[in-house]
Length: 509
Image (tube, rainbow, N blue to C red; front, side, top):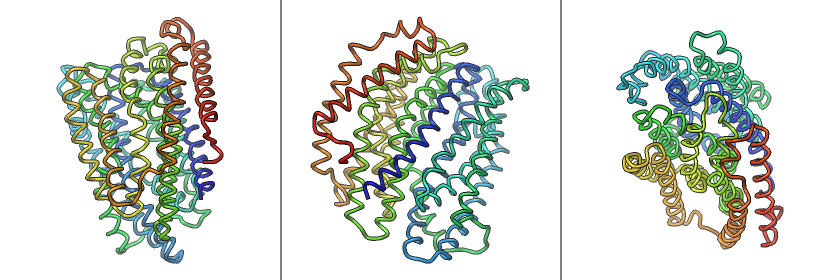
C-alpha cells in the first residue's frame, strides 16, 4: 500500500511540479509585461473569482464529495452502474454550471462590486470597468475547468493520476502565449491575459477526453434522477465551506485588499503564488492521492490501511513541509526579486510582496496538514465536521483580518490567513482523535522532533551563509538564479544529510 501511495503521489508531484514551474514562468511574464498596478489588480480579481469558484465546484467540494461516491459504486456495483452514476451526476453538474455561468456573465459588474467593492468606490473607475469586462471573458473558465475536474476525478478513481495532474500545464502555456503574442494586437494589452484563461480552459477540457474514452468512462447526457444525486447534494453543500476554507480566506484577503493602496492585490497574489508551489507539490498532491486511496479503503472496510494512509501522508508532508516553510520565510525577498523584479515590477513591489510571503509561508505546515486531514473525514462521507471546523476558521480569519489589516495593511491579511489555517488544522485533528478515527503515531511524533532539529541546522546555514538582499538587487537575472539555486541546493543537502544521520531513511518510509 505504501509503495502504491508513494508511486501515485510521486506521479502527481512530478506533474504538479512541471505545472507550477510553468506557473512561475507565467507570473514572471505577467510581472515583467504588466507590473504590479491598478490594471494588474483588475485582471487578478477577474481571474481570481472563477478560479476561486473552480476550487469549490471543481477541484474542491465537488471532487471531495464525488470521488467517495464513485469509489463506493466501483467497489460494490458493476461497471454499468458506475457509468450511470457518472452520467447522472455529470448531466446535473453541467446544467448547474451553465446556469451559473450565464447569469454571472450578464451581471458581471455586480459580481465585481461584491468581490472587489474597493474598485467601485475608487475615484477612477478604470479598474472597476476593466475588471467587469475581463470577468465576462474569464468566467466561462469556471464551466470548462469544473468539467475538467469532473473528468479528473473519474481518472483518479481509476488510479490514472498523471493526466489530471498534467492538465494545468496547458492553462499556463495558454496564458504565456497570450501575454507575449496576443497582447500586441489588443488596444488594452492586459486583456490578452483574460483571453488566455478562456482558451486554456477549452484546451484543458479537450485534453482529458481521449483518456476517459480509453477507460470507457466518457460521461453522457441522460434524463431522469439517480440516488447518487441526493448523496452528492447532501455531501457537497457543507463541503463548499469545509474543504475550501483556505481559498475562501484568500478571497476575503483580496476583497479587503481592494480598499487598500493600489498594488495590494498584486503583492498578495505574487506571494500567494510562491506559497502555492510547495503547497501544491506537497499538500495538494498528497490530498489528491489520499482522497482516492482513503475512499477505496473505507469502501472496503479496511480501517488499518485507512489509518496507515493518513499517517504516511503526514510523515511525507512533515518531511518536505518543514524545509519548504523555512525557505519561504528566510528567502522570501531573494525569491521574489529573482523571479519577478524586472522591468515593470520594481524593488518596492518586490519588497511588499516579500513581506506578505513571509506571513503566508509561516503557515505552510498548517495549510499542508489541512489538505491531508480533511480527506480523512470526506472519504467517510462526513462533510459536517469539516464544515463546522471551516466556519470557525473562516470567522477567525475575518475577525483577524480586520485587526491586522488596520495595523499591517496587506501583510496583516496574510498573517490572519496563516493563523486561521493553524486553527483549522488543530480542530480537524482534535475531532479525528476524539472520534478514534486517527491519532498521531509514536513514529510520527519521534520523526517530528528529528525533522525540527534538521530544519534548525538548515536555518542556521541560511542565516549565516546566504547572500544579502543587496546582492540580489545589484546583480542580473543569471547571478540571482545561481545564488538562490546554490543556497537552496546546499540547504537541502544539509537538511537531508542531517535526517540521515538522525536515522531517518526515506526508503524505509
